[in-house]
Length: 405
Ligand SMILES: Cc1cc2nc3c(=O)[nH]c(=O)nc-3n(C[C@H](O)[C@H](O)[C@H](O)COP(=O)(O)OP(=O)(O)OC[C@H]3O[C@@H](n4cnc5c(N)ncnc54)[C@H](O)[C@@H]3O)c2cc1C
Image (cartoon, rainbow, N blue to C red):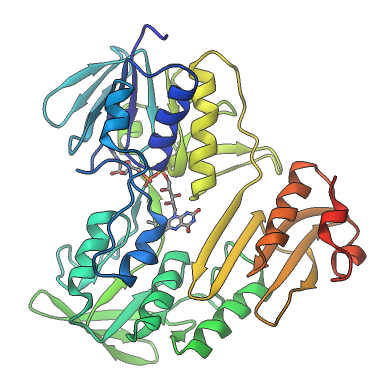
């Protein structure tokens, strides 16, 4: 059992997984979990999907209070950390409580990027990061017939599909020439666009916003370069920024994310960081990376748990991600980058296929649409570091299973 206390800041996926991994490694006592939100860690992905399908759908806790109690983990809800003193090794919470620590882990995630031209508190403008955000949107949902989504990112498109399927008129304003351009290939962008359009979502690409009109505390009209759009309710989904305020205040190195080394240690030897808030060295291209995904949050938490327990471990991930947009299940393994050679493998129907992307002869990224088996096989290829010949991958008669050990 560790004698010095471990303080974890942040009550999201990474923090919850870290608690679970520490318990698995026999370390439960002497852990403090400091949460800004007033609920225990919960699953965020359903907030843009299942949560709106049923008015009484509740949020899904990752672990129950009884689990934390059973393992002696002290949870501080609705009590954000406000000051970190790495010299004294103390963390101060909003309530005035000061927690001394032996080791501290930052798992503070991200916050939604805002638009300065929209005043805070505008009644019909929403963001979606937390259960509270989702609840506020769902409270208004049944009274509204139309929604405008600013930004065609993953969360925006998931919501667009969910709301459209529930009979709402949805307009998506995307400034870029293609959807999800930083994360997926042009071929997949086009497929996603066409799928949403044919389902009835009004997606307007290259929509440049010139300004907003308000009536009282409501945003009523969006001025575009090409005209204007009257709106009932707006959801801003223009990405997220790392929540690094505490790290910056403590003098830790940050660069659009808390900078960590391969063991996920920050510039202070007693402080680690995990999940969406971290910028870590990415072994595959020698650059640094910040990822927003469940895989990244959970895997980083497991690595830090090992390091805290004296088992030196490095984070060398194969990133993978999924997004459910209506009937479209997208799954990615590896990272897409421009100028890769694309090989397509057709699935059972036009709505299912996989794209294998190669750099020279090496597999860099596999994108699958409604092809979960291909995704599983692709993950194995990355784990086993095998790059099957494109001719075999593209042949639907060659089972992918036969190409991995
Ligand atoms: C609507 C939605 C849908 C998503 N869908 C998917 C999906 O389909 N697939 C996927 O892979 N990923 C998805 N994600 C992303 C995924 O949820 C995140 O990558 C994951 O939650 C990151 O975990 P984290 O612990 O780093 O951050 P978070 O889960 O965001 O948790 C961070 C926590 O830290 C708290 N915090 C911040 N500052 C402080 C402080 N000073 N003191 C105390 N607490 C603090 C925050 O309040 C928050 O609770 C989705 C995210 C959202 C919002």
